[in-house]
Image (cartoon, rainbow, N blue to C red; front, side):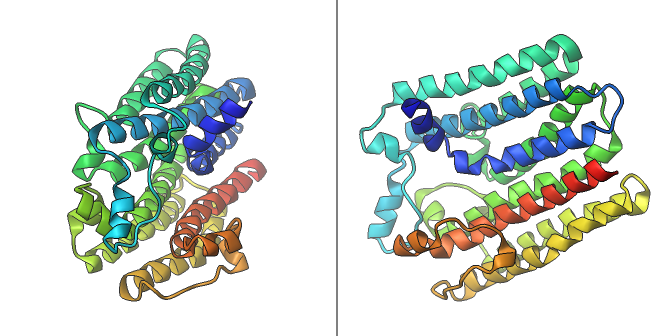
Amino acid sequence: MNIIRFWMRNARSKALPQSALPAFLALCMASQAEGFSVYLGLLAVVGVMAGHLSINLFDDYFDYKIKKPDFRDAMLRKGFRARIAKCAYITSGKSDLKQLLIACFAFGAVAVSMGFLIFLYRGNMILWLALITAFLGVSYSGAPLRLSYHGLGEILIGIMFGPLLMAGVYYSACGQLSWQVLFVSVPVGLLVANIVYVHAIMDYEPDKEAGKMTVAVWLKNKTWMLACLLILLTIAFSSIIGGVIAGYLSPRYLLTLLTLPMAIALFYLMREFIRHPEKKFSPQFWMGPMGDWSRMKALDLDWFMIRWLLARNLLSFFCLLIIIVSLIS
């Protein structure tokens, strides 16, 4: 059990809500469709989570092979405001690349096993969705595409954790697709991408120094970074409104607008980060859970975590509201 916890932590299991909530949301939406199987749906959710952990570890593996990830320590010594070193479990000597690769394939094997069982019942559609997602996941930082090194990481994550993930779980659970789940998957994918994009804005200086290409680094101008954030959030909420107007979504889906204050607060905090990076903020109850805040302050991570966790909580509450709507419809 200790080894499982060790690799779950290294695989950034705290980020699992980014895949688990969209997957569970798709499962709940599928529960209203004909041919629904809760067992196949749950297999898909488990497969998605295992695949997410595997991709996170593959990202560490390829990043380490390409460039030693202790560059953030060097950034700190140069006076940059960086968050934490990546792959600390390797640089500290607690593990090595061979063990990391084994862990990558172990989580991947769980995902493949779940996918194979679903394939036996649902056929080739699941096979193609799984293959496309796996290829894009490995290509995030792996050869030959290394998409995250060309400023495409946030876009890729939005596609994988939105339309591809939700379509895969929905089809696994009921054997069909619907315009409803496709309309919902777009804003969900955008809000997942938003978490990564917020991270990229805060890591703009160290990423630029290290030669890592993100959308923030590609934009260069911090005013344009904020504009892009505003556009991303606006499209996410507009997609739900558009789906309701077009008749694909029930008016109940407008309950997601209850999370709009969180989106506005996130934009404000990011604007203040760019204008006054040393300014401190305290979390409010309506921002959602923020973990051990005292410890974050002691580690001088509060400036980062209040924004990253707010972005994560925005996705979480957005999905939870749609889950409620799906179950009462």
